[in-house]
Image (cartoon, rainbow, N blue to C red; front, side, top):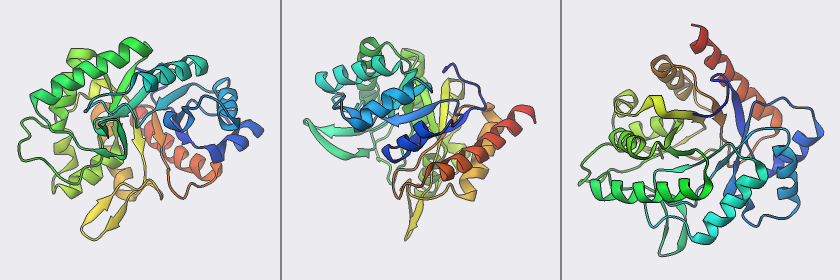
Length: 274
């Protein structure tokens, strides 16, 4: 578990936010940053990130570990560990997915097969990252648009077994849960049934868009009312957890991110005291 208040709410900081956060005395319990944007470990934005890390606890969120595939390259893992040490990061997170094939970045998060062979592969890569970084590692459920016919176990069972074997934590993305349930014609709370909720370290909230019959996880708009409602339902089952607002496209100013974070904080506090 992360050493944060269960009602802590904040947002994923992008480069456009950094100058404003450094100029203002903004109070935030923690921040999340996209580690892959700073792998050069130098430059003006990385310098700003170092300054922000002096003010706020930092979670490094990744898209390049590709834990469901061959895992990260040695160079990627070396740079990630160096960044984590320089920023005194409190945790690292990535997705239950494949993001590289034969050393080529896919610039997307592909779903994995839920079977025992993939489970063994994930276990090995998780342990490799944990040994190198020596930080809590959390896995995020991705938005899915299909299911493999030869899946043998469900997503929650996969995460529960990985948690049992490796003590890996869970980054529970409520928007992804909602999008997946819609696209696979399922109930989000049924999908959540086997998730190891005790292992959830923090949550994500983000926006999605409808494209014909599908919902697409665009991270380019406000959190929908349906996802806010699902967030409340999930918290009623597991209790409050630190929460991050994500916004990756058409990124708004800090004031908008703070407003979304304030809504999340209110819901977290209601779950805590209600």
